Amino acid sequence: MLTPSLEDYLEEIYRFSLSLDTVRVTDISKRLQVALPSVTKALYKLRDESYIKYERYGEIKLTDQGKEFGYYLVTRNQLLQEFLALICSKCNFAAEAEAMEHYLSTATIDAIKTLVQFMKDNPFCQQAFNDFMNSEE
Picture 1: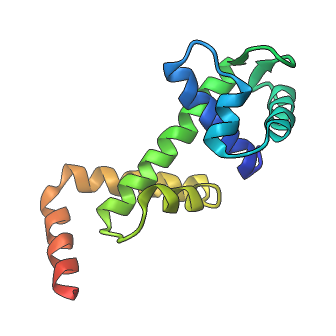
Picture 2: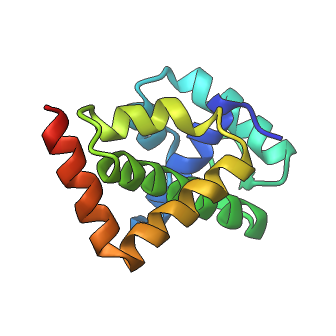
């Protein structure tokens, strides 16, 4: 089980890997706004947990396990942002999803996923909810 901080590192490595051939320590440092030594320390921990392949000053490559969990982390974040939009939350979706994602159980994430899918499949329910929310203002 990864700490929330290590999940953030893995999530960013996964995001970078979707568009870059080579992920570098400096890329992660800039994106997460952390010092280079902090990134290196996290990379060694991720390597020890078999999520990445990494040697000092070398390329960062996701293992199959890293790709799978990275995908989960990114889709979990997207799901939570979609959920926040669905419930008409007046917040910064990205920041709120980031605050929520590490502390919700898998069972709760699955329930949110089911609710979001239900609302997509039943747009009249979504419209009724939106109408209710607008009448409360």
